[in-house]
Amino acid sequence: FTSNLTARLTFDGFRVMQLGCDPKHDSCNTIFGGYSLPTLGEQWRLFKEAGKEDQLAVGDVIFRNDLRPGVPIFGCELGGPEVGRGCGGQGISSGFKTLEGLGMSKWDLDYIVMDFLGDVVCGGFATPLARSLAEHVIIVVGHDRQSLYAANNIAKAAQYFRSMGGSTHVLGLVVNRDDGSDTADLYARAVGLPILARVPLSRPVRELADACKLALEEPPFAAL
Image (cartoon, rainbow, N blue to C red; front, side, top):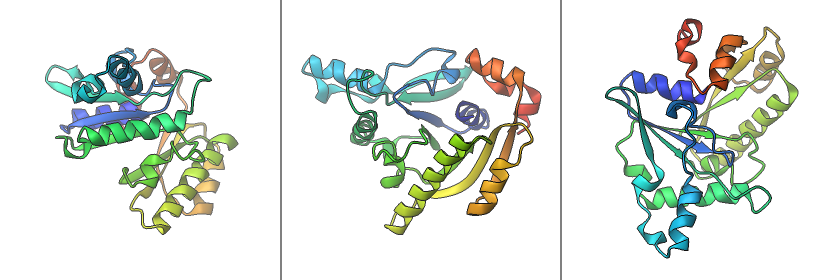
């Protein structure tokens, strides 16, 4: 969903960066033609090992791809430690500190779309909420219990940080792979969040995603 959202904004003329906030570092694959970006964490470690971490620059961690000639989109993957070798949440938190040190708030961008995990029980993954780095949150859910449990954690975290003076606002839910069930609808009514859009369960869209291609190629999806 995130890659198609950022691509749509880009095609509409906005300058957009997609920021992957997940140790799996696979958020930007689709908008970069299946290419896996070097992560901020990997780049920082390379510079540190060379004794040059203070020379890390924006161009070392932010990458550009033209979706069409003259239509650039930007991407960054925060990444994290190797499997079993550290705290993923701490890697995310450190990544944000590095980006802020590189002047992220002053970059010439219309949108920074942060694609982050639903596991905000971990303080690191909750960084965009805890520090009001995200102005608005859209929660992508399915009709399954695990998805809705994670969605509820995000909503609760956002509410908590707002009560502590934060400014991040949850806009609502997007129901992904909607098969016509009503479980997500029941949840939305229970917590008072609107359903912003529904992405129907679609084999062609899934196959495009598996091939790291934009689902905007499918007219019904593009119409959303």
